[in-house]
Structure formats: C-alpha cells, structure tokens
Amino acid sequence: MKAKKVNIDTIYQNPNNPRIIKDIKFRKLVKSIRDFPQMLEIRPIVVNKDKVVLGGNMRLTACLEAGLKQVYIVEVDLNEEQ
Image 1: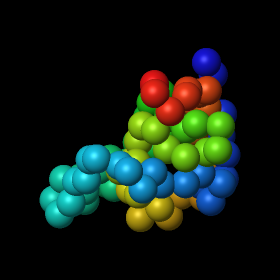
Image 2: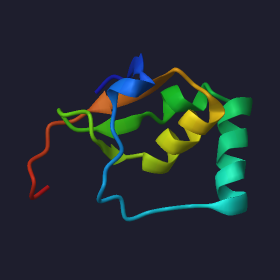
Image 3: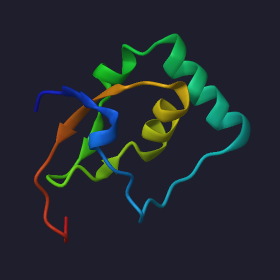
C-alpha cells in the first residue's frame, strides 16, 4: 500500500475512537508534527473506503491543530468485523 497526500478536510474522525490524548502529550504531538511533518508520510493515517480514520485519529486532530491543509493517508478495504 502506498501513501497518498489528500486535503485534510476529505477525511473524517472516527466517532468510535477509543484513544484520546490530551494536555501535555497532545501539545508534544502537535509540536512534533510542526517540527517534523515528513514523519506523516512515513507513518500515514489509515482510513477506510469512506475516508473514516481507522488509525491515527489523534494525529489527525494534531494536524488540524498544527494548521496543516494536507495529510498522507493509506486507504484500506476492511469489513465491519475486521
């Protein structure tokens, strides 16, 4: 699977996201994204065919906070069970 760059407003947070980071850890993530945005291509956000995030919800939130307009994603085709 190859990562592709997309507009950040074309992907959607997963409302069932079980993981949330906040406060200092979230600020560190935002700083990391601002300081080293190339890492987002190395570790892209994983989305389903509907562009809902399956992996990387907090990275997406941090990217929005950092003011990014585009992010790298990998789209996977998984069913509900998977």
